[in-house]
Length: 202
Image 1 (cartoon, one colour):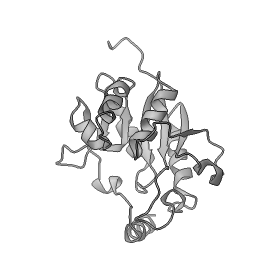
Image 2: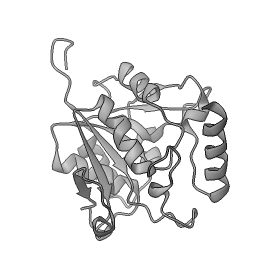
Image 3: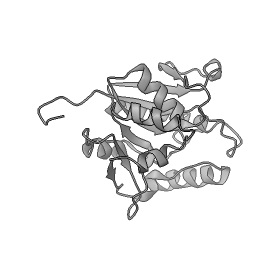
Image 4: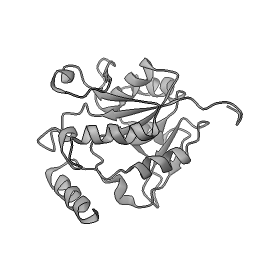
C-alpha cells in the first residue's frame, strides 16, 4: 500500500464472548464506569471507529440487550478470542478491526486514539505492549485485513493464542503513556483494584 492509497476502514469489535470463569460472573457486565463494561467499550470504540460490533459466542445473544450489531463466533472448534476476531474479519473482509477486550477497564479514549495515531496499515497489526516489552497485547490492537489468511492458517495448525500469532508476524508496536491502561481484570480482586483506581483518579 502506498501513502496515497486509502487505509481500510476501521471497525471496532468488543470481545465479550468469554465465559468469565475466573471472575465468577460475566466480566462484560461489570459496571466500572456506571454502565456494563461492554457498553462502555462500545462507546469508546464509537468515538474512533466507522462502525462498532459486539463479539458473542453462539447462544449468548439471547442474554444481551445491547442495540449494537453483534457478530457470533463462527469458526467451528476454535476456542478463545481468536474465534471472535476471525469471525469479524470473515464477515467484513474489507475492514481493519480495532479489537478491545471487555476485561480492560482502564483503557480510555486517549488509549485508542494513540493506537490509531501510530497505526501502520502496511503491517498486519498495530498492537500495544507495556513499556520495555515487545510482547503484543492482541486484544487492544488494530488487525489489518491482511491478517485474516495468516491467522486462519495459524489456527488450522491447532493453535489458538492471538499473542503467539502476533509474535510470529510483522507488526507495529505502540507503548502506552501509562502501563496501567492495559491492566487486565480477570479475577474479583482485579475488579476491586480497577474500581478503586477509577474512583481515586476521578
